[in-house]
Length: 317
Image: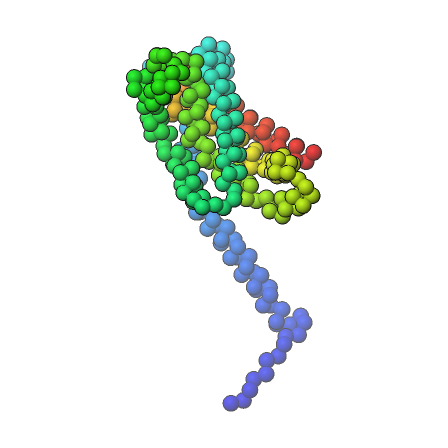
C-alpha cells in the first residue's frame, strides 16, 4: 500500500485556518457555557427574589407607615417616625442594655473557653476523637432542646443547681434563678454552652495552620511556652479570632431561643430580638416591630464591618 506523505502547511496557507477555526469553536463553546450558567442560576435567583428580596422590600415599606385599624389595613405614611419611636421606647432601651450584657458575657466566655479548648485539642492524644464527639454534641442539639434541658437544671423546686447549692450550704432557700439578678448571666452561659463548639473548631483550624517549625525554632532560641503563646500563637491566630468574634457577636446579638425557653417574654431578660417578637407577635405592632428588626440588622452589619476593618488595619500596620 503506497505511503502518503503529509505536508506541513506553509505559513499563510491552508494550515493557518485550523487555529482560527479552533479559536472560533472555543469562543462559541464559552458563550454557550456562559448562557447555560445563566439559565442554571435563574431559578435560584428567582427563589431568592421571591423569598428574600421581596419580603425585605415589603417589610421596609411597612415600617414607613403607621399601624392601621386592622392587621391588613395600612395607616398614614410616617417615614422614619416608627424608627424614632422605637429607639425612644423604654422597653427597647432596656432590651438593648440586656443585649449588651449578653454580648459581653458571651464573647468573653466563648473566646476564652474556645481558645483554651482549642489549645488542649491541638495535639494528638488518646481519646481525642471521643473528646471531639463530646465537644460537638451541644452544638448539634437544637437550641430549644438544650434550653429545655437547662430549664430542669434551673428549676426552683427540684433543679440540680438549687439541690447542689443547698447541699453545699451556699444558699439557705431554693432560688427562682430567672427572677434574680443572675438570670442574664445564666442564660448567657446556656447560650455559650451551645455555641462554644463552633468557636473552638474555628480557633482549632487556625491553630492547625501554624507550622510546628515556628515553635521548634523559638524553643531553640529559649522561648518558654508562655512566650510562645503570647508572641507566636496569638499573633498568628488573629484572623481566626476575628472570625470567631464576629460569629459570636452576631450570634449573641440575635439570642432568642434560650431566653424564650428559660424565661418566656419576661422583661428582666428581654433582648432586642425578644423585643421584636413582643412587638410583632404579642402586641401585633408590625410597623414598629419591623422597624426595630431593620435597626438590629443594620447594627449587626455595622459591627461586623468595623471589626473587619479594624483587623485589616491592624494586619497592615
